[in-house]
Length: 207
Ligand code: TYD
Image (cartoon, rainbow, N blue to C red):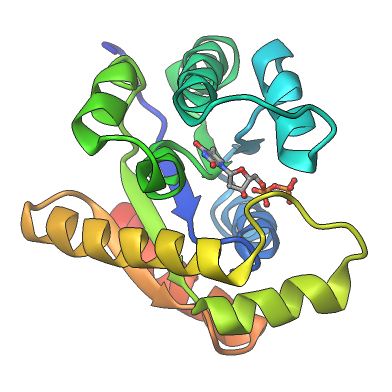
């Protein structure tokens, strides 16, 4: 991790919290306003392990046990770090990642011990800032069912409620321990959320 000059920004939140919309908008803003070269990344990644995970998430591949899925996410993350994230950071550019470590803690944390999850993810590089877009499950599920025909295995209100509770609890803990995290109220319209994210990023990296 020496010679890293770029910045690594991660977005987190439950399904339907608007992460994909906001990562795209932030990238355009950083490039047009500050001329910062930025790439978008996403987990599960487009690599071989990520492709396997997507089959599980869609329900096409069934019967995988919860700990094995947690290991697959961790394996995908190491692969993703090596093949995509680190080379970009080493070049001095920005990476904006749609989900990362904390997705594993919040989602896989429903069925796995947090210490074990941290252990299997110990080789993943740490983000410079994690942006938590906070949206309650009753709001996010309405967005998901209103915009898509097919849903994935975690997109159910009771599961999302547990994931949400995990996120809220973890973020409170990390904030207290001085980690670089910021929380945005994602229940407002996309333009307002975007403005607030810009302010947070500028405060953190630009001035
Ligand atoms: P999502 O990010 O919504 O992508 P898409 O819109 O392309 O389907 O879906 C990824 C799902 O994977 C989401 O439900 C969260 C889950 N996930 C985990 O459970 N653990 C992880 O470590 C990651 C990265 C994602």
